[in-house]
Amino acid sequence: MAQNGVTLNVEFVTVEKAQKFLDSMLTNRKIRQDKISQFTDDMLNNRWMMNAAPILIDRNGNMMDGAHRCGAIIRSGIGQKMVVARGVDPAARSTVDIGTKRTLGDELRMCGERNYKCLSAALSWLWRHLNDRMMDVNTCVGTVEGLKILEEHPDLRESVSKSLAVASITSCSLVALVHYIASKTDEIMADLFLDGLITGLDCEPSDPVYKLRNRLIKNRAMKAKLSGNDVAALLIKAWNATLLGTKPKFLKHTSRGDVREPFPRFADPRV
Image (cartoon, rainbow, N blue to C red):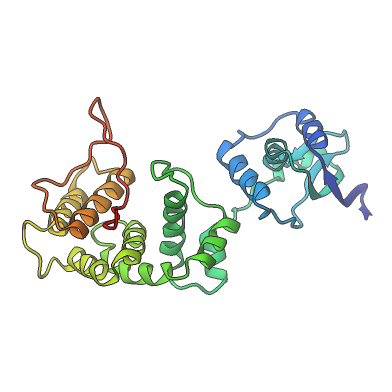
């Protein structure tokens, strides 16, 4: 199909062609390695889907848009069918990719999901947990993989719904993750843990969840707040102590300096 000298076709972009496209680029925005990694993972796991967003080649043969997709093809070693627009006016470069990207939260909202913002963040935390990347807080799950994880873990929705009430204290998405994983071990105890965190009622000062609640309330008022990693670690430590029936004198996690602790894992009482 051609219009105003621009042709639009579906092409199979091999590793060699992807490299040729990349080599032709004159200038480009900064390449986001996390985006290439996300696309690569989708390609390697057969989740990549061709859509109508084209790779743009100007009339001089230089690629104007498509670097992340080409980078993922090269990194994965798997060619993909792509829509390729050729003959684009080079002056149109300034109009490329200036729209707002659709996020996983946007997709969940359009799918009619309730609490889509918290659910989206909880899916990223669950993805980090499943991939042993809990320290990688700056990486979010991609839309395709996020929807797949939700399909495989539908009960995360309920944990999100139950965790919304904790938003005044800390991240509801993090609490939703901990409640979801905890409920797979002991659903009743997981609900009691969550209730204690939300209300503080029926808790003794020596209870791990009581210490956790006080720590998080203090954190909200501090200028130098705990990182997402530290909050996640404290949540897991408090849950582990509750599950195992221990009552540590202090609830803390050291993620910096010479005495840095390894990130805690969820306890399994069967081990």
